[in-house]
Image (tube, rainbow, N blue to C red):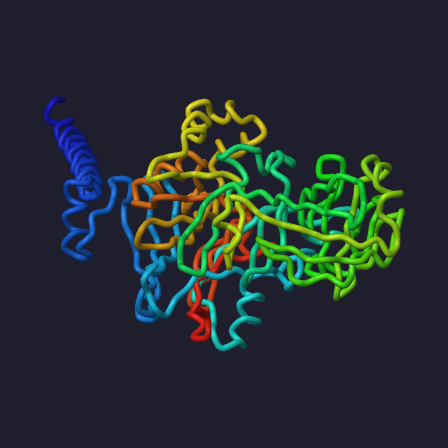
Length: 442
């Protein structure tokens, strides 16, 4: 009886041995991704040491890289693909730039569509990532409208009041952070404030404080300037509005100009003239000003954004939360991560893994970043805390979070480089870009 069972026993032992061998083989393959094996290999290939949280790094379209530019994909150990376009800050032929979707605040555009427009110019873009937050549409006809700062070629196109509107911009150094570049090439990352004043000529009224430029006018943001960059009309509801003409355009970070009121509209939704601006005041506050500002009233408009160095910024773009400061994860973000979103309840979505986009820099490089997510088996995304930690490990000194989710897109070298969450490229509000330097720029 024992002899008859011996072949079955041998087969069982053989199967067990094969299973054990398979397990050992898998373990050996995984061991090669351990830092002891992996970093040594990366050093030999690239002369760089990557953090232990990087399983592999791929060079994308490296045969098309101009001097000072790289396009890389990092495979994060947490199960996500991170795409990064890098620019050397000393690269003579490259510069940071921004682009507004459709050249207006209202409306959206894909990065591919915007870059197609820009490629017709002499200085084409090399890479671009979706930037600011906003609304995609509403019942007033705003088919897309950003909530953040946007400065383009020195023009102050958009700047919000620092408030926690729909959880996008808490009024603290952690929230409503913007990135800007000065004519000297300095990189800035701060919470920026407008500090606008309207003074009536030969009047006794105190100056009227201006809260925002090209933003929604309501009780939380009661005084707004609308420039031709907004769109055809202000799309306000029951605001008291004054059309200002004989005024200098465009608005800038350090600005002063005389004006004359040429029209008064107590119903809102005024037409924005191509050679002027519209001052909108929320109905309750307007009661204090409807008899002080009338047709033919003259005065002076002043703007001095702070911090003061921002008054000279040529290209600027806003995000919503600061991730890294001086090479370390932002202190409020650490509390946010440890509490799983409890320390900033309205931002609790940031404690979940989703597709993300961001911008960062250090003393040598600028980084445009997109993290793919919501794609099981390929990439699940990151939390805000995971982003900040990973960026710090990569040597990024300062970083902010951009709009994410299905909007997360990194376009580079002629095509979308990443894999957007919905399988297609979503239209967005503005773009942070790396492009060929304008030879005529100073």
